[in-house]
View 1 (cartoon, rainbow over the protein chains, first blue to last red):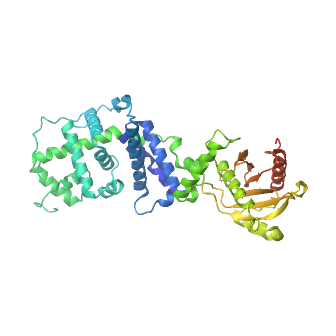
View 2 (view 1 turned 30 degrees about the horizontal axis):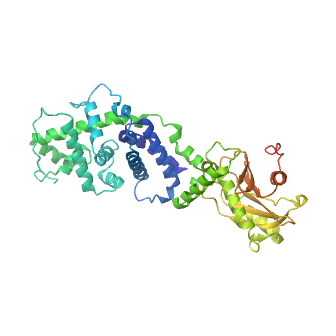
View 3 (view 1 turned 60 degrees about the vertical axis):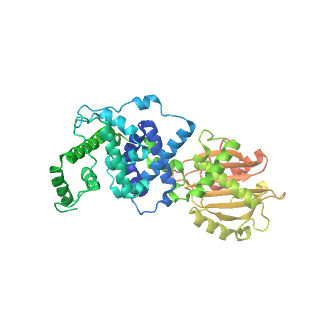
Length: 168
Length: 273
């Protein structure tokens, strides 16, 4: 069945995105499973205006946000060990940025900025695709990207560099 | 924005970092950065961020995918997804099934969530159809037993399996007629044929037949739903549910007879009932 094969092709990317959002492998896979089940049930509702992958990401994000909302209502927070656990970090660090710092800074980002940044950078979505998945205009996407990158830069301690004026 | 000199927007700088620019745009951004060290440092930092993000999170996509995330398996377990049923109907069906699962005792495959098993769905449909149509007097069937040959040809072609109407006269039941029913919201078994029988006491029994489920696996369930007894079995050709409100021994006898008539092969599944 072609539809299912196509979905299967998106599973690795969905897992990667879910893992980056949740920082918890089990929760991430739960989300992906939910997403796949929903996609399989709702396949009729998928109007092929965008790519199937975009639609899947949209479903995944909805589930993720619902999940967050539920947790917040229950007052049920992410277990400490999940927060404390830094992803296994390969030795060579890119540039001057400490991965652990970036990792923490990502966690501290507002959800909407994190969702946008990860879609573009990690998933390589085009700006149009990402905006479509997030249901926002491209201009809004760009400003979220900009704010996210600004925050990460400040957070990952580049005090030694010349402070930049905010140039328009 | 594309030749030397024109304004370099923030969006262009992001596009540069994310590899979204045309050759010409990239060239003009690079030219701009060469003479704006402050911006160049910022852009370089963004590039490092991108690398860091990919280093931190990229690996998850290369891990072997666990079976529970295999869409083929999920679709099979979800039974019925192949027909792409509109969501509201599915939601309604899920609610009903959930309620039934909670209120009714499920035997046989009771360890599995009722809304997840094909047999539970088919049984539910068979029982619903039984309750609905056995109450009817004038419209109990679409095609009456007087047109038996036509009825069976028609139903056989619609469910894509040749079926006979079991002869239950020895048990005191005669064929009233039958009807075609739409495919269940969840089921992958396609449309169903319902045959209705009646005895002298005006008690009615229905036989609900569909084509085999895609896996063609044999199965057997006895359950009570809404105070109706249902015997279900499946083989590699058909699924069949016999529904009625008779003493259990009588129901078993009827079910065994129906099974024997609808399968020409020696009975394995029902030897022990």
